[in-house]
Amino acid sequence: MTELFTDTDLQRIAATAERDGQDPVEWLKRIVRERLDAEELEHALVGARFTVATHAAGDS
Image 1 (cartoon, helix red, strand yellow):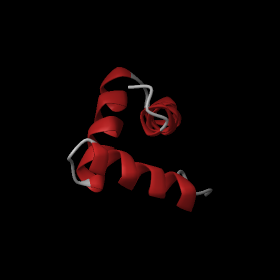
Image 2 (cartoon, one colour):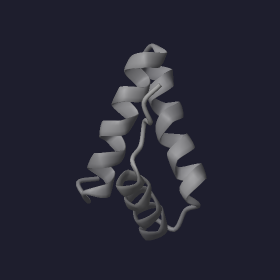
Image 3 (tube, helix red, strand yellow):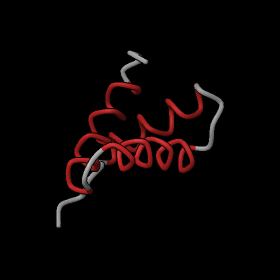
Image 4 (tube, rainbow, N blue to C red):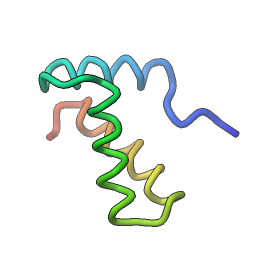
C-alpha cells in the first residue's frame, strides 16, 4: 500500500496545525473525519489528502 502522506506533506501538516494553534495529529484527524462523514472511505482519504494540501497552502 502506498503512503497516503509524504514526509513533505507531514511537514506541511505540522506547520499548518501549529499556525492554527492545534496538535498536528488532532488537526489531521479532524480533516479525515470531516471527509469520512461526507464520502466513502477511499474517496474520503483521497479528499483528505487534497484538503490537507489546500489548508497547508494557506487557502483556508
